[in-house]
Image (cartoon, rainbow, N blue to C red; front, side):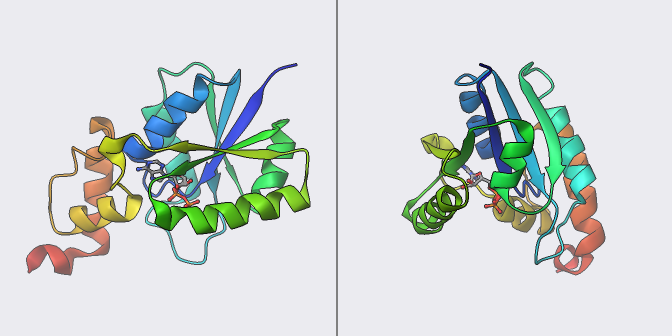
Length: 168
Ligand code: ADP
């Protein structure tokens, strides 16, 4: 039986931290489906379609990784993909409480789907999409945080959204 996992998240935008989790989990399964969540309470910087495209660019060398957008519950998305595993990343203790609660909730909804956690590589422990958006909004160098091919896209979008910060 093919071992399939999904890695759901917002990825707004994808960072080296996410990519690290993607690369490492792709080695553990036959197929990894990165799931880009559509329905969020806040307006994202990038549309789901744009986020999918950016992840596709960043993962083009990983042959067993594909990217899809989804809305609703991660367990439903996993089921639709034929996956029995949900992958999540843990950076710090602050991630733990929420992630534990989600994993337990998901097991109540569907006991056949398990969540596995990869702890972040130390060099990316501080890194989040929020950090990237914040640094970019002040005109800072984001090359330490996201793949080179995406820097122009992210910088441009952030400048459109918050030109005031850059003028300060
Ligand atoms: P969400 O809104 O679902 O938290 P994110 O895009 O912020 O979406 O994160 C998706 C997953 O990736 C989460 O499990 C998060 O903990 C993990 N993650 C985010 N940044 C990192 C990082 N630097 N290292 C490891 N895991 C990370």
